[in-house]
Image 1 (cartoon, rainbow, N blue to C red):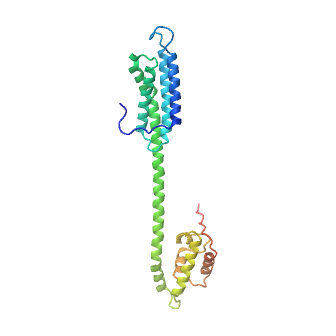
Image 2: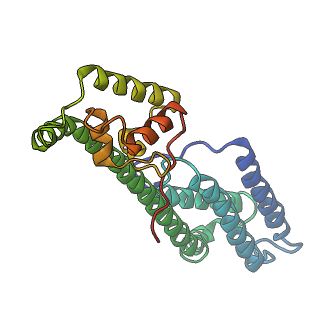
Image 3: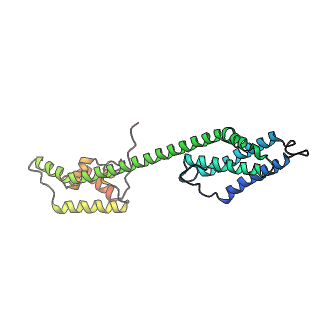
Length: 254
């Protein structure tokens, strides 16, 4: 009986043709083992065993190589390939001259000598493939989580900005008056227009860019119209926005 649980998907014609070519060679070679004398005394057992084991290994490798690239490949598939290959080669041998009384011996040699090492070899390849797949999936999940956290930090910063701005306004000397609502609206429109033209970069990408000429505290001062219009930072930053220059990331320090 074959190993329990899942079944192997059907082989494509191209792969099946390779297996059948191997089986045709086995049949031709087995027929040649019968000899000219009285059967079974004239039968070439040594050659027949070698042919069956060699063709079994080749047919097994052809199928294992194909299934390793298929979605869902697992160690159980390798066990199924071994079982069906062994069954096919046993049948070919017995229907092409191999004495029936030695069929158990032939099956044992296929299982213990020819295919046992191959099964372990391909199972190890399956395990390595699964480990690489899990590692890649883990990295993708980590990258997604990091991107989500970065977005959350940006949203939090934008929510905290008005609070920080209010606190900073209250701490500034009384002779410096906060900008009007109109000024804040003008700056918000300028920023929105810039984002629309440059594929919607985040606030963080803007104030960390090496060509924006502004840093985080000044950026939020500018948004809340705290940074004076006459300051050089304000002038340079608004020129950057008006020219629609995409933000260029700073080179990380070595």
